[in-house]
Image (cartoon, rainbow, N blue to C red):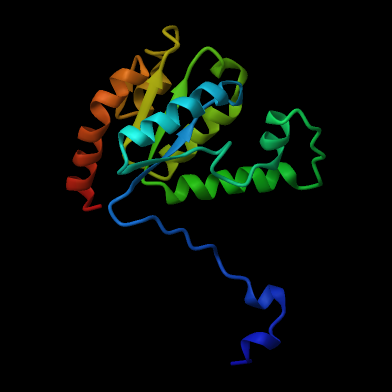
Amino acid sequence: MPKEKKLNWAQRLKAPVVKFPKGLFTFYLSHPEASRHYVRKWELGFEERHPKIALVNPFYDLENEDVKAKDEGKKFKKFPGFEWRMTQRDYIAIAFSRGIVAVVDENSEKSIGTIMEIVMARTLAKNPKLLICTNEKLRTHPWLYTHFHKIYASFEEFEKDVERQVARVKKKWGF
């Protein structure tokens, strides 16, 4: 086996290791980009009220220079491959999270990303799959109904039940 320092970048490349502190339950937080400000405000308050639950927000908790620039009113130049890297980064975050919390609201009809993240979480069998659906027109949609373990009409309703859902999954899967 050659010495490590003589290897080139391709030979030294390793898959990323994602580690969460013991006892922390992680959810990928899927939501439309247009809703990111109010969802972020809620997320930070939620994590204060529920310190054993982390919500991985793709707009703020992952490397996302375009959102940072947009929030600061700056221009962002996308280099070739930007979209591929962004979706792969989100896909990895979904894979490493234990469950998904999706927000379907008045902006959801303008966002394909949220729907794709929901499908990816379903494909990867993330548990639990929880939906906060403030868009009353979509709350009983067959695709949402069959993709989620539970659908909540409000953020408050979700917060009242989330600890029970986490306990259920921990008991079933041994997390």
